[in-house]
Image (cartoon, rainbow, N blue to C red; front, side, top):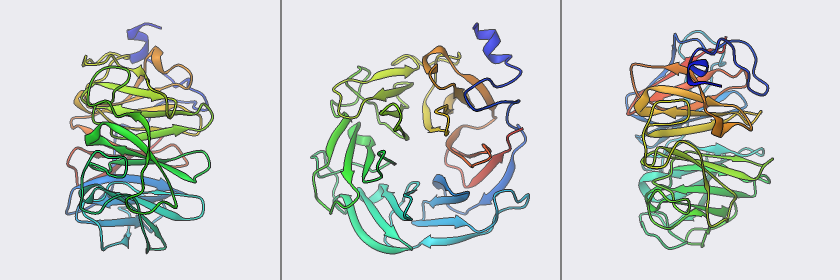
Length: 307
């Protein structure tokens, strides 16, 4: 398929996705005073990580056409948290970016630090130099942690305790452009079907694919250290998410667009599904495939309905 055909694509043709694109007109659904550090959706409830140290959730249905009502879930003990993740039993795990640790909660009850050491940054296996993003393994008994300033991904048991060593899963060879390196990895997505872990390298302009624990990964999207705006290149990708059909969505920040990559054909190039006048950073999907976005340093969440 040619470049022109990608950008003129009249209908989606990815696995499990039919019809046309997403509505380019956004609905403002959440406004905050402080910068939003991340968003996450579980069972059609939107969770918001507020840089003031609060995790909120929506109490309005996501099909509401009015701004969503929210309530605080965790309001103490956090320093600039990023987006949480929640397992099937309701346990919440929060990357506390500003305090170099990962917290475990249940119904807002504090269960302790499961990764990193409070207030201590470092590069040992029991330390983090920022906890940016999280993802579960296939059993939800372990968590992948994007330790972005160490340019690596570690894995910890969900029952780990503060100061326990993690296991190196990807990167860990300094920041760089080689296949055995990551470059300040941000968002994570794990595909239990293929056993591949995906992460964005914003400064390398790529998405890396790793078998957890392998010494090298593959630049599955983009060309390492080359920024571009074609269907096969990226410019400072910030976050990614995988839908239930294994299609990938990437916020291509400096190109002000969202790219979609069909399952099994990531390296063939993506489909530009949304473009903006701002720089999109964080992305989430609900069960109806509606897209939720935050711009860089943004205080608002916008919804783009699937058409």
